[in-house]
Image (cartoon, rainbow, N blue to C red; front, side, top):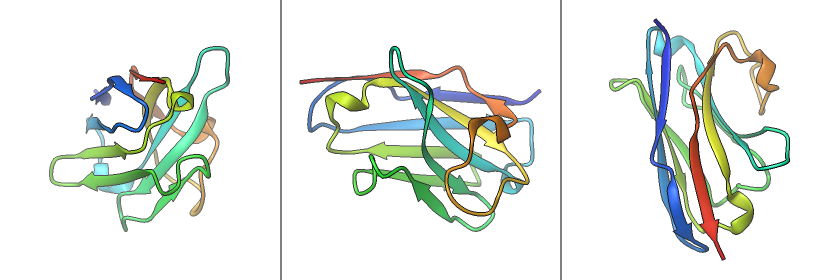
Length: 126
């Protein structure tokens, strides 16, 4: 059974940091791309970051570049999203997703991902 389980969300003040984790199981982790998405209340879900676990290439949305860092631990089949200098506009439910055979570059549409976690809430207070 494929599972993606996010953790690490919470409430933090603006300027603070959080580290999200995505624990993956049930598929060949090294063959997959793992992406982080977020959905704020009343807004569409948007891509935040992506990592290709085969070669470590990473991609970020412009809104988080320089503040967020995505990384993977293939031995633990986990992906992390280190979020620094958080802003109130980062408040959202954060999801990780897994997909294979994705286009080779950039953040890609969510419908190209095969598997999704249940999400973790991140709230940034001003």
